[in-house]
Image 1: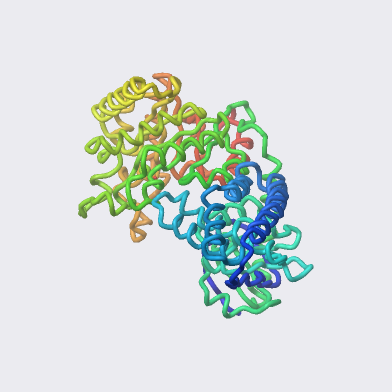
Image 2 (image 1 turned 30 degrees about the horizontal axis):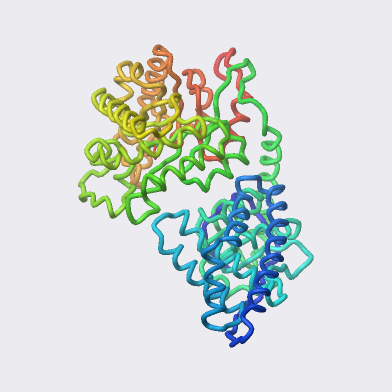
Amino acid sequence: MRKYKGKGVYGAYALGKISIFKRQDISVKRFHVEDTSSEKARIKSAKEKSALQIKSIHEKALKEVGETNAQIFEIHMMMLEDEDYNESIENIIDTQHVNAEYAVAVTADNFSEMFSSMDDAYMQARAADVKDISNRIISNLSGETSEKISSDDKMIICSDDLVPSETVSLDKAKVLAFITANGSSNSHTAILARNMNIPAVIGVGSRFLSEIEEGMEAIVDGFTGEIYVNPDEKTKADMLEKKRADEEKKKLLQSLKGKDNVTLDGRRVNIYANIGSVNNIGAVLVNDAGGIGLFRSEFLYLENNDFPSEEQQFNAYKRVLESMAGKKVIIRTLDIGADKQAEYFNLKKEDNPALGYRAIRICLTKPEIFRVQLRALFRASIYGSLGIMFPMITSVGEVEKILDICEEVKAELKSDGIEFSDNIELGIMIETPAAAIISDRLAPMVDFFSVGTNDLIQYTLACDRQNPDIEEFCDTHHEAVLRLIEMSAENAHKHNIWIGICGELAADTSLTEVFLRMGIDELSVSPPYILALRDKVRSLDLSKGSN
Ligand code: PEP
Ligand code: MG
């Protein structure tokens, strides 16, 4: 038995035989051609064929992975018609007198290099798409097909990487799981895997590919990212038991889609999702979240090599709001610093970074950064139901300053004639003991509170959340933490604002009843936890003593 470790991107188990994904090598040769117009005519018909194929993949994707995820193929369709892309192909044919395949391959290389070198993470991801679409055109020019699964049985598909069209083209009925040597958890491929309910492990490294053979038996643990090749009997038996229990649990949870988050005695609670990227929306929708309770906007900054522009941010926020189709979306302003560092901020090294220059402290002392984000957020607000929340609040003065800056930014937009919604909720995170203790003063100033338990625990218990050595002292159920949350909930309701919890503790179902009894109105958790939390809520009866 050999063990490998990658990153699990969809939690499920699989046991089966390995199939090495066969991508026909599309090696392109360069020929001299006299008749350039016939090469251009070949391009035209290959593009028509490609368009039909993409249309049918798009329809398949719409059925299997939903509208948002199927949009990738709309992008492919747009690329197919992109003027610059097509002009480049024709110019290469005309000026170099070369065959169509070669002109497409060179154009693909140039465009994908250009996309890869862009700062915007969204544009960088387009490099894979331009390659994908170009390979399709080349295949159609030469009459080859690129995707194929070599067996009729369900197999564990192993590959260096899979481009989105390859992932969705895989016949789900024949795929047990997939493993890729490369790939990132935010790639389209990973997202599609999650939404197709296929256990998937990415980034296992190229050694894995060189050591496996077609038909070898393997176990895929999509939770831990572990892979066992030629597993022994004991490992197999353990895994089958885990698989059975997991499938049973998931089957039961699926039946909760579309159901209300309501306790037996009629108490309702909003269950929202936490995301760090626009690319997580698929999982939010598939798990039937009522909204987004925390979009960690700093990931837009972390994915970049320089400050994301207003336009870049606007596009990201707009996409999230549009995808949620009117459901509440709460975007947290930049929470950089401490464990989240981006070099271009040039932050000084600190002895106690968690207690240092981070989050709102950066925004208030560098308002030029803050204003760009606020402009982007306000502009995006017309595309849905937006809430904006501010992290790491410790004082009334900070909130006053924030609200003043918001007013100034709005006035600026108004005078520029730029539209924004007049119905944007402004809230703060309760993630410092100070904020909880003065929550009676803060509540009248804002529209909502969201408790960040990850930081609230670290600051209340003086336990660095990054330090695994002190975990035993970090009692997440500590009475002091719970009292601070309760105090904040009381003060929120006294001032008629709502209060949610968006830290990891929101997903701890052993506390759901406690939170509901405190009057918490919203729980925001990672998408895979939504249905389990709904299940817990629906099992509670708050009219009785503790359940
Ligand atoms: C928190 O502190 O609980 C929180 C949600 O914010 P983050 O984990 O991003 O610090
Ligand atoms: Mg926090």
